[in-house]
Image (cartoon, rainbow, N blue to C red; front, side, top):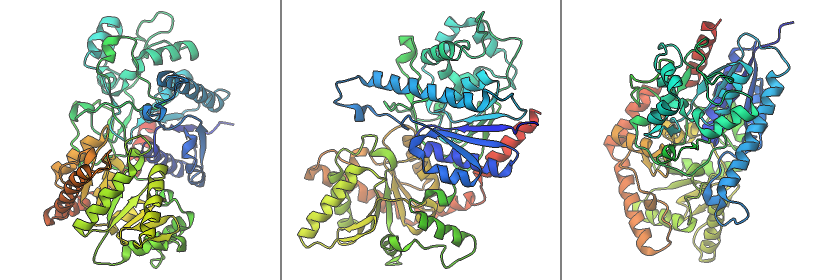
Length: 547
């Protein structure tokens, strides 16, 4: 009996890197029932298991963390950060290899077998080569790396035959455009040693493992790349020390190390928001924004069920939360004429950028006094921030200031700041907000654009700077805030006052009639897009073309 074809989706990184790919895996499984669909990601994303199972997708975890920050490692004397990172990477790749051996090792290849990876799961490219499976790239964020300026010169010098082979490739075959656009890390030393020593492949892709010469007898087709962000040459680049287990790009040549740059973050984009340059490789496809199902994004199962029943037809429940979260519900809805302003920094705190949570809270409290706004603050599970909120609430209570505790939330500053430790979908919350203050992740940006609400953006790293500047250029946000204008490191009056002045000024700009009108205009343009369905359609089209 012929086995079912297998589709393995592998995505590594933080929640915003992983959930959009999981959404595509679930949609693909629902549409292509003849497939056995598997999703491989970090065990930190265990919450996905139940959602994927409901869509007939097998969830397989690896133990590596979504990201490792030098800031978290600071002060450790037992082992250097580099050694720590290297150990994580080795274990991570070993786990990935074992998973693929379990899936593909004992069963003959079936026509239609597929591996789909994001850019932080480049192990998948070499494992696809090992098991002779078609590989496509599903990228829910900006391309996370830019080739060093010396890369092409060094490549041509060290690998002249392979360089010529790639330069001479027909447009529909793997060529230099693919390499320089996204594949160049695969030629890094640490990938080469893993390929040759562990997988017994050639050190460099597209070369013979015995002779080291290009595989002229077998030119692979240019890989399908479902695009969700712009090319790095189009954006302002900012370096980062964040490490993603599947994304080691250390070259053995110091010349290549001199200006390696990293980018991170999230979700698909719309052609209405970002123009697509003509020099991209031939197999790049832009799908539109990728949003996970709303139900996946509730931290509370009861709230998720209520929301789902509302979407299916019970309009009385559609806009409600469960009884345990009436505090959040009440804060959002009353007073109805004064919509709250959302504030969320996602994983920025856990990556070490929110060093003084008390100073951050002081900025918000003072801004509330000046602006007259109401704020909803999502703490994103960042423990130091939640501890500061609790401490602030206890101090305020002892001074007879109004505080109100509710399940998973607390009100501060006379009830004008509601701090929430859980999560609700942005596409549920943002339409009920006057504006969104956030870090510039592409997921938050996309949700605000879809909801038609103005944005105030404070980028911290990576492609967040691009999105913040792009939103200002589009007219839906003021100029980006500098980091110290939202989360100052020092809890001193001078720094707090400076931050508050800049934040209030940005909020005033965002609440102008021109910015509100522009946000609604763009939201209307995006209303008919369905990025996940488009991605599934393109994958199906690619599979048919290979038969």
